[in-house]
Length: 216
Ligand SMILES: O=C(O)CCC(=O)C(=O)O
Ligand SMILES: [Mn+2]
Image (cartoon, rainbow, N blue to C red):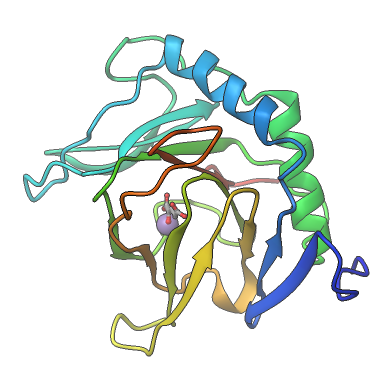
């Protein structure tokens, strides 16, 4: 494990077994990441997806990678093609992959080569209710989640929805990694406060890297 306990940025804040927050880990890369999000969104626009229950999500989403997470009346799934455009999702930029790889290694997850990256865009008031990331066929790989722009409160619980929740503020450049014993822990984001960030205005972006198809 990297020596990230010395109190200087970036630093590692343990969250749960197999999970930690790499504070400011993506800070230096953030301007490039945001430019690349814009580029991806030109080809695969952000959209508010509708859940099988008929609820329109307050978070706008798009994807890059061989597979992209989508939901509609038929259910939740990973798809190789963007249902909005009929085209494959844009590839995951090399800078995203490098950051994700370094973050996974910092928590001793070894070589992580994600095939899916969900990109979330939160406006003021947008939230993500408590859920598990469980649509992936391969649960051996961790989740790597990068926060950019306006800070948000992340809730992280346990294997049961009713387990006690920890609440932590995720700020610009913070990266959360969870896997192993906490891979299926419930988590969510509380409604985004009306705040502003110099690089994103009132918006928060989040990248979550996943191994969606079964890896060898
Ligand atoms: O926005 C976040 O920090 C969490 C995103 C998340 O849990 C998800 O996309 O499944
Ligand atoms: Mn999630």
